[in-house]
Length: 64
Image: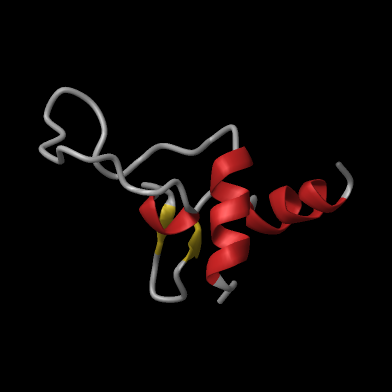
């Protein structure tokens, strides 16, 4: 599993990021920090991106 710093960096730069609490039914008053951990695509027993783009996004960060 990636570390929290990597998850924040990828989440903040990912074009597919969709917050778990999103839309008119979102009940949170304060927005959650943008991170893979707060994205609807971060799932499964292994807690990885269901779109299988985490590593690609992480590598793209290193090139910018």
